Every structure is written in C-alpha cells, then in structure tokens.
Image (cartoon, rainbow, N blue to C red; front, side, top):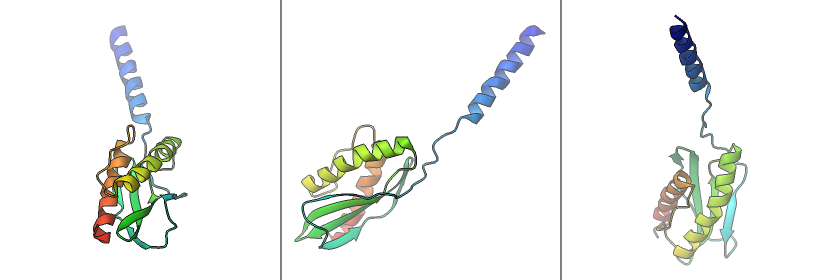
Length: 133
C-alpha cells in the first residue's frame, strides 16, 4: 500500500510540474527598429512579408538606390522577453551587415538564432522580389 501511495503522489507531482511549465508565447512587439546602411534611406523602400517563426514574427524593409541595397531595417522581430531581446540584439545587426555585403538573401544563418535567421531571409527575399533584384 505504501508503494502505491508513493507512486501515485510522485506521478501527480510530476504531472503538476509538467503542466505548470510556462513556455514562450512567441509574442512579437516592435519597440525598436534596427537600421544599418551606407546611405540615408532616401531611395526606393520595399517591405518584405511578415514571416511567422516559432520565436515570433520577422519583417525586413530594404532601401534600394541604383540597383543596390543601401539600408536594411527590421521593424518586426522576435522580442518581448529578455531571451528574445538578447537574441535579436545579437543576430539582427549581423544579418543586416551580411545582407549589405552580399546584396542578396544568400546569407548565412546566425548561430543560436536559427528561427530568426530563417524568417529574416524569407522576408528579405520577398522584399528583394518586390524590388525586382
């Protein structure tokens, strides 16, 4: 009888812990814009699709002058928690700089930001398609 009671209590405790675990909601908040470029955003601006990832939404906007990407902004990116803010703050400047260097969506993902990188590249490609680059 003791074993059954102990087993039952430990099972209930494990289930309570399992179901009370809070996961990330993937909420997307846009309190900041990350911009990097070699020229002010005075050319033609193209906005990519909002891409939903497991970590939150991502959207990229590019500025094109004379057929070249001169600036990239990321108005929508995963944020709202310290983890998302940290990952976005670390990965987005790297992705933006790679975009400016490559002048295409053929860029590497940032280690530790796989979902953000994938969403960034997909949104970037839709912006490039809109710009016909």
